[in-house]
Each structure stands twice: as C-alpha cells, then as structure tokens.
Amino acid sequence: MKEEYDFSKAKRGPIIKQTGKSRITIYLDNDILEEFRNLADLSGQGYQTMINEALREYLGKTNRPIDENTLRRILREELDKVG
Image (cartoon, rainbow, N blue to C red; front, side, top):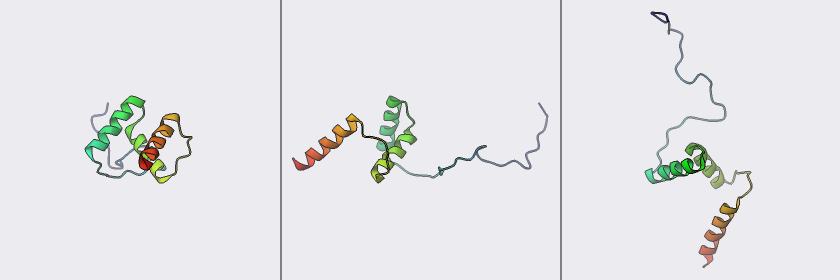
C-alpha cells in the first residue's frame, strides 16, 4: 500500500452511472414508508422497487397481469363503493 495517493483527478459519486433512474429527495409519511419496508421484508423485494411499482400502477403504466390477490382487492374495493 502506498503512503500517499493522488486524488487530484478523482470524481465523487458512483463508479457506474445509473441509466433510467434519477436520484431525488422525497419526503414520505413515516407510516407509508414503514408499511413499504414491512411489505418488502415479507416479499423479499426492495422497498424502493415496491414504491416504484405502486406509482406505476397508480399512473396506469404497469404491463404485468393482475394476480389473484390484487383482483380480489380491487373487487372488494369496488363492491364496497356500491354497497
């Protein structure tokens, strides 16, 4: 190991730039964030991935088929609306 290193041409930040993603600062309510983290722990997915999926679903930009649990949830919500 060298005693001294030259960092004069060094750049801060990630080594590999992410494509198709942007780093932002966003404030979410604690209960929302905690729920996504709990769901992520149960499903084995990352909570940020789940937030992205929820936002895509809200915007109607999801291309995946609806699973049985989601269909049941949607039907319950709609039936509750009409009584």
